[in-house]
Image (cartoon, rainbow, N blue to C red; front, top):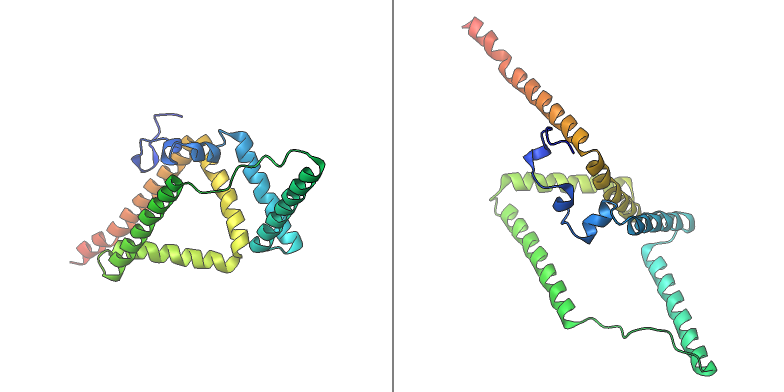
Length: 203
């Protein structure tokens, strides 16, 4: 990456750091190609199944769970009859630490959502209200164009494509956006200053 180009929003952190710098960032930036390819393949495959067979998420999940449980049940029964080893499965349970961590994370996000809602309801932050209103309008508009399943699959593909594409062509994209922003700012200033000379001549 060329350091001579002006960074978007004057940021100093890399894309990997902005995404958290963990396993999720590695997958989104295709640094774990096997996992990334698997996610994209499963997403496209499941979308084709939904569209071809008119499945819903609930129908697909129920069918998959039923198939897995049937295979494991028959495997266990046949193993006990034929003196074969049972399926190598560990006991299914959620540890207390996992439950506490999940509840803590959920509580943090719910409290943030409630705080934002309270600030908007009390009229404390007009800018926040406008931003939330725009986001909700965009969500409603996109939701009117496609169903939830298509939106979910499209969202996964966008998340898997956009960060990696941006990281690869970061300098070019940043330079173009900064150039467009400067041009738009210059045009705005010209438009803002344009009437003043006319008023001066009239006076």
